[in-house]
Length: 67
Picture (spheres, rainbow, N blue to C red):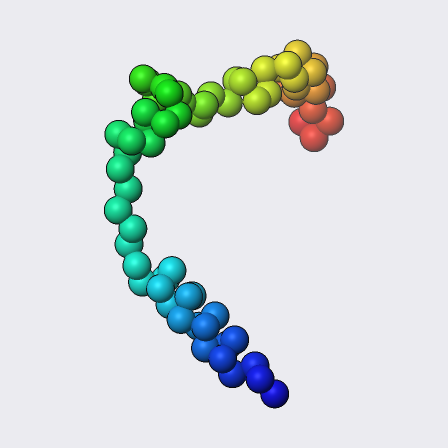
């Protein structure tokens, strides 16, 4: 017993989060972070660059036993 109010409150908060669209001030966010330019980290070479030599060693097509 006594869970009705707590569940109603949770439902109300969840509904507000789901259906509200908060405004976002991107200029203020940029000032807060302190960066003047956007940084992109979409380079796959950064993630796997150190393994290129190892991958080349094991990806040699001449050693494929299925051929």
